Length: 551
Image (tube, rainbow, N blue to C red):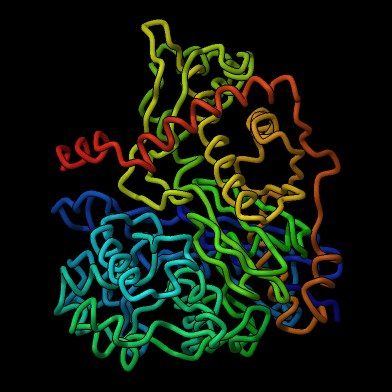
């Protein structure tokens, strides 16, 4: 009987599932479910009290609806029986943790806590835990905690313990009622299998689980957390599971409730959960050192494999076996990429331009791309800093805000659009520079995600970076990566290299840089770097003061 695997990718605005052939990687069918409540950043569902600034929450019921609607649809459309599904893999945005009762029920489903925002999933781009991140970094440096180096010099407000500490500070009664503080990616595996299984991937990149100077992988000593707050005295005993599981292994088997929800067979193997960007690496055909993968969507994540560990400024973590077995996996990234372009389309384009685009049968992104691509590098005189959602790498400062320089009365929407695209590529340039200045070479560049569908944007990236860029052949690379994890975990492939060889594929023609444009962009990038250091690294107080005034 022919066997297949399912990969499920839980993103920022939607979840998608693919049904793939493990022999070839062919995606027989895909399905996307857009979250009903999406990103909760203004009001809780059914509430009228405004949420505080920099809040970004989600409803875990949206994740269950992904399972409910996408997986049965895949089976129906393909005619493949549940008995033919050999395994399921899942990936998730991170860090997106939530508080639960001991049975896995989210506190936001408890009537006692439903109207408290701290009872909901704190999405990765929830940034109001910056004061807690600052506390963690101060104490971590004071104690010489290794996670400070391992996370490129700073622990982020986006991550697991910053958000937990915010709950303790702002809602201590809710914190005490929480039996488990868990990544949503581990929580969905819990819902699928009926028992709690935590992934080394989530813990290593977001939860301070580090190789402490060769003493073995561990969380910080309890004294560190007691130094943050006496309220964390029960952290290890009650809130966390100390048992972590490696990637490419079976977390458990589909429980009765999950089988009923998905239409799959009870007992189907479920792989250990993986961070969404990490899952995309094998789908791009990357299985060895020196290859950078850019996962380009609402934000951009950078994944790089190396043979050995070196400290790198502003990374989001370095974990041995954290992306693929046998390699050190580095993560870095930008907090906004497609989100910036979406913001401009929604808020910055005049109706006259929109009417003209509609008359030509174009959506706004297509019309802006067409006109922006006709400009020469530097022609508009504009330069932007890509901090619309803070800076993840290399400055690790969620409080930074975006800047646009060189505006004139004659500045047009396509010129601004082009400047924003170029800014995201310049931000990537800084990330590449950080790795190579630390002695870690980047020999090849790969990309996947929604932004890769814009050919002009990808050419601009190649021109700015001065490197060829290979792109994944599927628009669902992350979900395919989860399917690859499922294929390895359930034994359809002996290891990741075999699965990558069989299931990954790339578009035949990479984007090749034009070196005349690259030379021009190098001049602009120098100016970008001056502003980047002045406003970000040297902490010129203007942006911070403006932010304080706004609050």
